[in-house]
Each structure stands twice: as structure tokens, then as C-alpha cells.
Image (tube, rainbow, N blue to C red; front, side):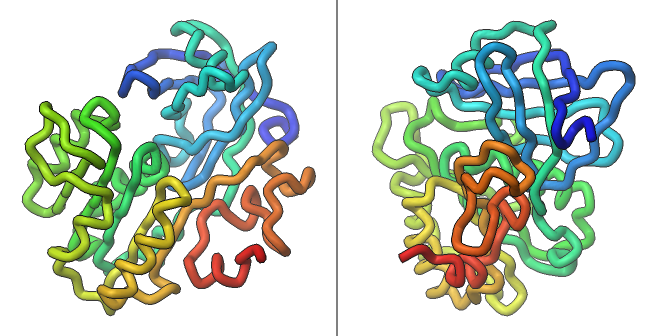
Length: 273
């Protein structure tokens, strides 16, 4: 049961600073072990002496020697602050992957609208990788990505490469005017009015801070996207990752095992009073 109950040991191969508060850690499993993940799944990562916490996988594939995770440092967070203090060559524990992830087969033949806010781009990134690698299986692709200020943009090089493509419409916006920014200004929903989509063939993949969700739902509905075609990845406090501790329960659902990916129609049934 190693991987579900007992962590595998991984070494930090490299660390890339994305923003002043976020880093991407490339992890490699020891002794030739491999891991298989689908976009949207998560792992439980142990920083020895600090604790364990869930993180979305930043890469997906079969029988990988390791994976990437992008982590925001919270100064008061034992695990995130501990992880950010480590250097390449340090060891961590890794359980998983867990969760349902995105149903990529259900997206084949569809137009895809990605909507990301802040660090919500992290779980969307491996799905974008998959879609671009299988580009002929999908229709129109659009990414709307909002963040607070230019210094908080994740994956700058990848975003530049995506924007350079003629088959991927990537639109970026920041919350408030900034002297280093010449693009659109406003929260991510300000990009919706000029959006041209075919609602009947569109799946919306939405990840970001929960406060943005009602506003994105409203904009999607205005465009004619149904609740069943809006797909979210939820954040919830998870301790075990396998549906035993109950920390992530929402009514009859466990975010760690039934999610973290849910349609908005499912989320409405889970709504808490």
C-alpha cells in the first residue's frame, strides 16, 4: 500500500522561481519508481519534520519518473514555508496521485474555454499540455487568465509560447493598473463580453479562488454554457487524501475521492446551507 498510506521518497531535482511567492519543484522518485497522473489529480507531499499537505500535479502522463508541483509559500504554513526553504538534492515524501482529475475523453471534439485566476493556472496547466499535444482532437481553444499584478504571472515562458500559436487564443488581465502592464485591466470576468464561442460545443474549465466562481458562472451562463459543461477543480482542506478522515466532506461527497473535479451541476447539489 505504499503510495496510498506510506509515502514514496522523492528528491528535489530542480527549483524554478515563478513569482516572489511561488516556486515550481521538479521531483524525481528514487530507485527507478514511476508515477502515473492524469490532469487535475493531486498528491500529498511530506516535508519531513514539518508535515504533509495536498498539492495539484503540474505535469501528467504515464509511468513518469517524477513530476512538477508549483507551490505558493505561506509564511505561517509549516509545509509550504518548509518546502520553500529546501534546496535541490533534498528529500520529500510523496503519496498519490489521488482524486478523479479531468475527464479528457469527454473533452474530445469540444471547444475548450479555460478560465484561471491566480494560482488556479496550476491544475489547468497539465490539461493544456495534454490538449496541445493532441491538438487535432479539439476545437477552438481559449484561455482567460487573470492575476493581481505583472509580478504574479505564472509560467511566463509557457504563456509566451502559447500566445505565439495561431490555434490558441490566450488573453491575460491584471486586477488593477500597473506601470509595467499594457494589456487589459480588470478581473478575469471583464474578458467575457468580447468572447466569441459556440456554447453548444464548449466545455469551460474553471479554476481559481472560490470568490471568483459565482461571477464566472454568471458570465458563462450569459454565453449559453450549461451547468453541466462548466467544470471546476475545488480546494478543500484534506488530511488523508483517501476519504477516511472526513476533513474534505461536503454533504455526501469527499473532495479527495469524488473530486477535486466537479461540474457546476454537481456542485449545486453539494451546496452547503
